[in-house]
Image (cartoon, rainbow, N blue to C red):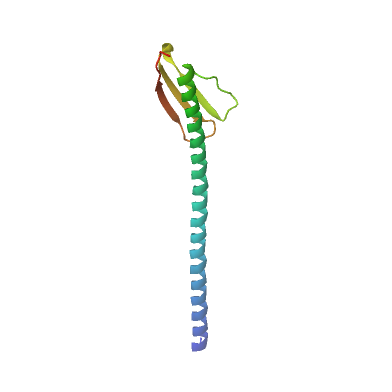
Length: 116
């Protein structure tokens, strides 16, 4: 093998090494960007679901405070709502969970005044 062939082989090997490193770097960078976008969209979904559950909770609290009884809830709703009033006391436990498989659960213990 001559010296000229050896230099060409070295240049080709160096070019191949640089190409592999660039492909590896850009693939890692693109994976990182995609993961961040997916996490961002999941966080937005959780925020939206939590906000809707809080709005339902506020409505139920207002209803119980005004009428001193648990509201009837639509079964076709996207949320499972459970209002527990043991022994017709002044204490209401309100539980709200989405029917989707999301780990958001709200609970509120409401103590009302029995006198109107």
